[in-house]
Length: 443
Image (cartoon, rainbow, N blue to C red):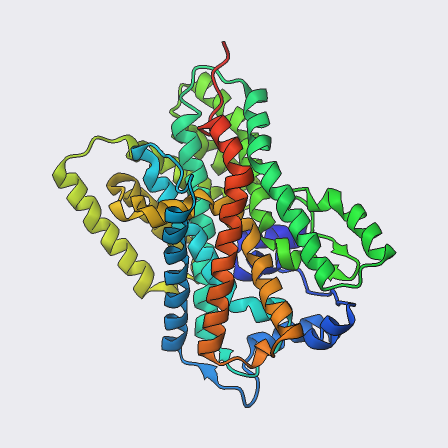
């Protein structure tokens, strides 16, 4: 649990996002071919250190090359989303026009998280690169992208519930929590089963593995409230490490009745009540994640404002300045949590006012539509694609930058296709039942 809280205080550091709260990768695979191919019997912490430090004789990819690789991956994400939207009935979701920008913003957030994880797939496989290495500046940029993506997710949650749930005169909280379970549990259960299947591919499936898988199920299904267990000798944190963020989402849901009580007793607006409760929780549990729920709640009234042309023009200018600052000064912002929080607040507030058409575009909305499935499944797809290629086809650690980018792009496209399938077959039916995140008032 110490790793979990350290991860929250670090604002979604990439090690937390990729490897489950920075937990050491202490598992080893026992499948004969994969053990030889992946060489996971060496000391895990030494392996992790080696991967983050350029190996003698291995050239580091120039920072411009890293940017080009990230641009290719980003193009793959939105290009795949557009293709899926034209080929798959039901994509994108049928959103009200005034909330499409939120769906698009979800798409941007999950894209940033994937940009954090995709280039680090060799790190997750504990393979020391021999073709090229990522330099320290690139690793810092990946940290930054992942943290901003997760922070935007938290802001969206705070904004939605401040906007839709808290103005209600009365709330059926049992129905609310039932719908949250109905919305989140089925896809998460599929992700857990998929993680066990991937773990089985990289393990010797014997009686001990099966028994440990059954024993691990309660902790695996705990939405990140507990450290993720081993199954056999396989560390499941390597596949489900992002689940720590879901634990904070559930914490936020649990405090909503308290927020509702503050509103009713103190006659405070919903966004103000969320901020007050979040401030108390920040004092008790640390600065961390709660700040971003509060920032989203603060921005919620802005999404309902009827603005003039002049006000929207001013907001567009402020949005451009904010984005420019986040791009040009990312290395400074990445090291200062207060500065980062202020930039995210300004970004989210400006987006809520402007609601850019780009966020309402078909590709962005489609990506946001299945962002929950994609958030849960993408790391294990990357792991399986690279691990199986390494075991049976070629040495992925020796790939050139171009070959690595092409294989990663293929893994990204596959992750998106599988996530869209998860949405269409499972997730959509519960979204359609709810049609909105808030429960009905008590009659």
